[in-house]
View 1 (cartoon, rainbow, N blue to C red):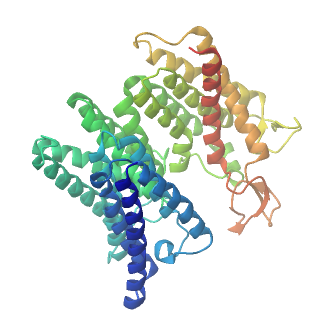
View 2: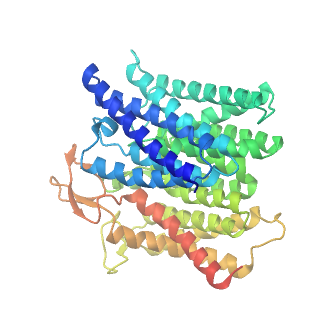
View 3: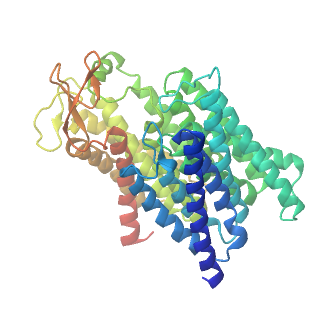
Length: 502
C-alpha cells in the first residue's frame, strides 16, 4: 500500500467517527429516536464507503477497516454500546453484516468490477434505508404475509423503485463518462431485474441480514448481466419468470409459505437462470417429489405436529437449509468452471433428499423407530430416530437425485461422471442423512413441555405453553441440522476429490 492509501485510511477512520459523533449530537438535540439516527449513520457511512474506489489505489486499507469494524460492531452489540449505531427495539446484527458484505465485495470486485462494487454499496446504503423509512411511516401499511420479520408492501415498493433509480442514474453517468455504452432499453432492463432481486433479498431479511443479502444478491445479478451475453441475460430473466411461477403455484398448493415462496424466487432464479437444465432438473425433482411425498399419510403426520418444529409447508429457512448449500456450489461452479462443483451440488441435494425422504417415509412405519445412538425404541418423531423403512426411503431419495444428476449432465463435454463416482455420491447422500440423524440426537435443541412433559422441537406447546430448554444447543434447530446435512454431503465429495482427484 502506498503512503497515500495509509493516509486515506486514517482520514476515513476520522470521518467515520465524525459521522457517528454528529449523528449522536443530532439525536440528542433533536430528540430523535436511536432508530432514526441509526438509519442516518447507515446512509452516510454507505455513501462514504462507496467513494473509496475513486480515491484508493489498493483495496487493503478498506479490507483492514472492514475486518476491524466487524469485530468492533459485534462487541458493541454484545455490550450494548454505540447506541447511535445499534439502537433498536430488537437486537440487530446489521452493523456486523455491513462490513462483512463490503469485505466480500471489495475482495472480489475491486480489481476489475468497481462499478458493481460502488452501485451495490449504494443500493445497501440508500435503497435498504428508504424501504425501512417508508415502511415504518406508511399511514396504512399493507403487511406482507410472511413468517419472518414484518414487512410492508409500501416498503418493498420503495426498495424496488430506489434500487431501480440508483441503477438508472449510475448507468447514465457511466455512459456519459464513456465507461459503458448501453442503450436506454438495456439500462431499464438491467435496472428492473436487479431491483426485483434486491427487493426479494430485503423482504427475506431478519436481524439486519439485509446488509449482507441485498448487496451480495445485487452484485451477483449485476455481474452476470454485465459480463454474460445478451442471450444468457434473457435466460436469466426467463429463470426469474419460471421461479416466480413455481413460487406462486407452490404457495397456492401450500407447499411453501410466504417466505418460502420468496426464498424460492431467489434460489430458483440462480439455478434456472445461471445453471440451465443441468442444475435445474435435479433440484426440480427434489422439490416436486419431496413436496408430494410430504402430503402422503397426512393424517398420521398431523399427529406429529406437536413434536416437529415445523409443518410440511416449507418456509424460507427450510428452503435455504435444503437448497442453500447446493446454490452456493452453483456459484462456485460458475466462477471456478470446475465440474467437481457440480458433483458437490448433486451430493448436497442427494443428502437433503435422503434426509427428507427418510423422515417423510419413516413416519409412516407402524412401529416406533430406534435411536441412532442406542438402538433402543424411541417415540415416533424423536430427533435421531431411525427405522428400516426410513433408511430405505433415504436410499431411494439419494438414488433418485444421483440418477437425475447423471442424466441431466449427459450432454456435458468432456463427461465427468464415472461409475465409481456415481456410487460414491449415492452412498454419500445416505451417509449424510445418517449425519443428520446423529446431529438431531446429540446437538439439536430439544424442549420439554411443562403441561404434558413431552419432549419436542417446539418453543410453544399445549395451548400456547412455553416449553423449557431440555438438551442440545439452543441455536441448533432442525433447519441448522438440515443445512449441516447438506454440508456433510459436500465435504464427503471434497474429501474424495482431495484424496483421489477426479
